[in-house]
Image (cartoon, rainbow, N blue to C red; front, side):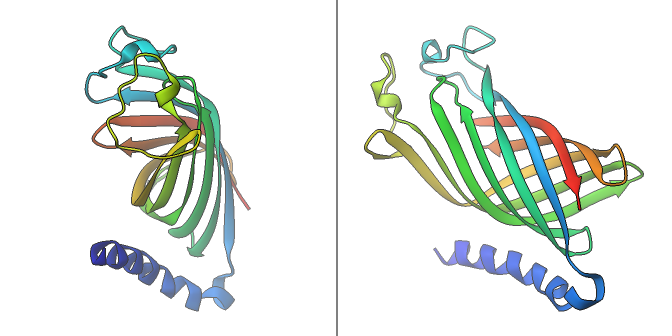
Length: 193
């Protein structure tokens, strides 16, 4: 538990210099809308038959239909931000699922029109209970409450590639590593204001 507290404290400590500069530079914002996605499973699923939108027979690659919206509050120029994100989508079993995330974002690199951000922070993932599906064997990974299953992560990450289309608008690709199970992708736009 102390390790998680340390990670959160470290993220917010990185943000403190930006708070001190608030009067000098002012805050900047960004709003992100992305279509979500594509899930790539890193190991064979024990029950690919419950993935109706799988691209291959073993369920390694599955289409998920949904969206992610996010809001960034820049705290150190355009280099550090706090992001709040909400995703709502049909998961690999085509069941209603989503996630709620808040965390720190930092610029990894920027060259010409290209940039990459990385982020980390607490995330709640939830889905309709898969135990209702024929062929599903519950492995106990998710907690259950009524018709829903959920998992809380103290820290979850994201990589975001942005290509600047105009001064304020970026084409954006998100990669969410759900290690060791899968990697998910989303595509959309980021608007700075």
